[in-house]
Image 1 (cartoon, rainbow, N blue to C red):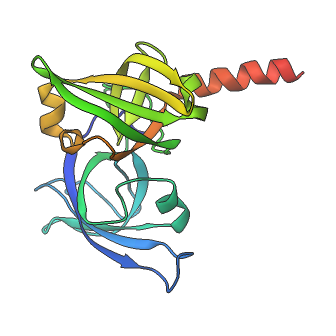
Image 2 (cartoon, helix red, strand yellow):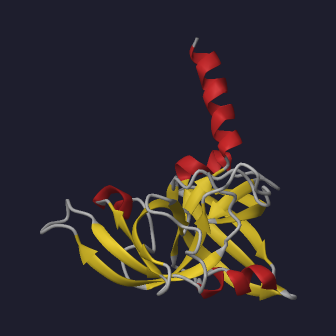
Length: 208
């Protein structure tokens, strides 16, 4: 489990194929901030751009680590197939503060940035989510974008999806990779778990 509060900015430095064709996944090597891996062990979970991954090797002194990502995960996520910056969050401990909201690290869909521009001291980020995720996006509800826990300011249903708006303060832009986004970029989305359970309960009762 995670909270959507980014604990470090990393960078994918190397991508190696685990096989000869597209049915195979890839091995990623990532550079972490100094000291980030001091409490990490083999098999630990670290969310990369909101996708939960398992540490398969690490060098705390470097500091760098590797993860293996399957072809299916590559197909259903964005920003993990090529070198570049990533948001990182270590798995939640039972006694940690829940600063964001409950996040599983399982990407529910890929969104597309439709607008990103300054508004006063902050920035407005608009994203078009797949149509099947629109029902989970609600005013003042929670959503995870590339691993960052954020609050929905507005949601507008479209013919091909749902466009929702987020306000990003300077602190968020400084401590995550969201400041590098631009119109047309793809992002990983995870909807609020409570909304998912509510839908299941209501559909189950209706089916019975």
